[in-house]
Length: 444
Ligand code: NAP
Ligand code: HSE
Image 1: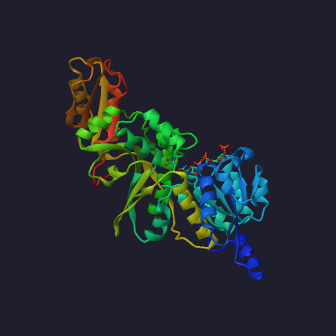
Image 2: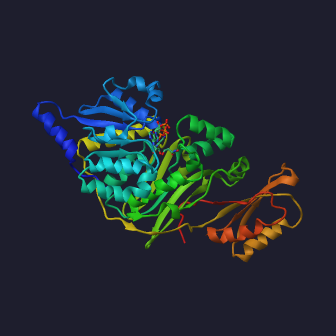
Image 3: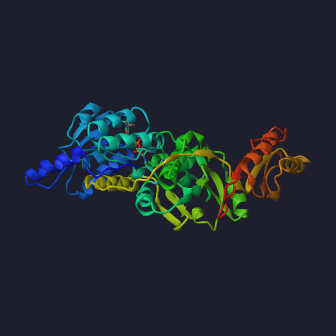
């Protein structure tokens, strides 16, 4: 993402302070005093970085916000406002945007950039959809636009890729980039119930304002697009990236996954093949031996594979106020010190969700003779070969869950077979189809 060395407002502020013989001061406004915004205020208050001064906080319904415990740590001189124009017309050098969403945020940040203010944001939707044009605007106005907290919360994946991997040719990314889904699935792995752990994740401040962004994969696909742009220099349309919800994964799937020496995680993966990127965000079976299976709670993990440097792994807390605040404040320090990041050309790329992978198919049926042979027939018709059939005893025959796994084949091929199987009278639910991640997985 574009990040220029100097900014008019930061440098002007520094010059005026230098004239007075004072340490340079960078004035900062926080836009949004929720989970991350209030944690940023806490980190700034605790660390007292020289030259950084929080001067404004913008939020709706400021009186409600000022009664929170975190507000007590905000210096008394800070101006609280519900009027964005107070910020836009102020002498603030850097705005930190922690509200989320596209509208009206994009318009406000455009105005901030045009008025010479640098922007630090954790807003993945904004950066996935509008990052390229906002970066151009920031470059034109000689200000910074940085978003290190937009992917993997407190894990420095973005600065690590920009500063540490720009010299490689990255061809593949895979891992866990949504803390809420990882929190839910890793707790379901030990027997917890989906609805209960989702409510916990919301209460703990991990989930998005609308948690369907987490569980249905839209948060992770925005992050995958940002990473693809930085690591593979590929600009993707987020709406074109295949996503699958974790909400249809049930306790029985963890039991069957265990029999296959696997667990289940929401995996985000992208692989550059020629001019096409194969990309998908979905719950997948992950071998217990894979590092991706070892991530629990809000931990994120991104494995980046480069042509020259091989695999590099980033891991740590991907959600939560304080880990994310660390990434935001680190970006702020970089902006305040005029740090410049690596910039490489980005090209628009086509996206497909196709991967050649073994598949896990879970059926719930009203049991009767001939079901397995019908499934085998439908799979044979599309050229998919069965690898195993798992049916544990003890489930009621009138609501019997059982599993078929296939040898590697394209997901679109399996989906074609499932489309016809879903119409069978005995099927009580739409069959669940999950890719099975393999070490060294290759797209078709
Ligand atoms: P949050 O707790 O919902 O906080 C958002 C704050 O912004 C709230 O105080 C909200 O006010 C305020 N706000 C939202 N829209 C506004 C508007 N139009 N005008 C005025 N105030 C507005 O969200 P969060 O978890 O801190 O997340 C903030 C951003 O960081 C999002 O882009 C999110 O995706 C990103 N992020 C979050 C995490 C995390 O772990 N939470 C990690 C990485 C990145 P109300 O209280 O009135 O709603
Ligand atoms: N809701 C997001 C998650 C926050 O759970 O990963 C961090 O981006």
